[in-house]
Image (cartoon, rainbow, N blue to C red; front, side, top):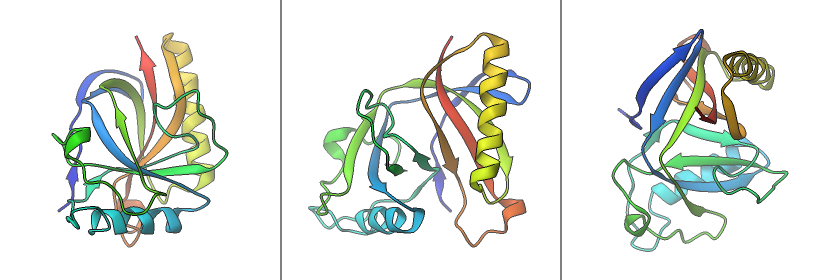
Length: 172
């Protein structure tokens, strides 16, 4: 079973859940599509790293239009990130052998999310993003950065059983 990164629920506003996440380390790639990005990241956790060490898979897989927490770097490419196992700091994560895989630290942060089921099509994600932004605006909550998608299940899980979330960092 894939481990899920921990978080603390700090409140709600309608369908929006507010969470605090601990500091994380991400293995991130820029990719024009999900398959190439996933394959690079899966290779990294399967041993394509300096000690040839296998790294446990964690959920969610995060997709964004910009690399999380690296503003003001702007990229037109999408990014895909695997979260390194909880408790690993930057110095404990193996160095990737493929220079397309970057290791990115993310400090502790508060995130607003809306959970949904389905295949996470672009239309679904866009609709959930609109609901999230509208709900946060009504609640007077300031957003930071860009919206990102968190997917918790492998692609062979039927859509009606898949857990997905659209999130954005916030300041309250």
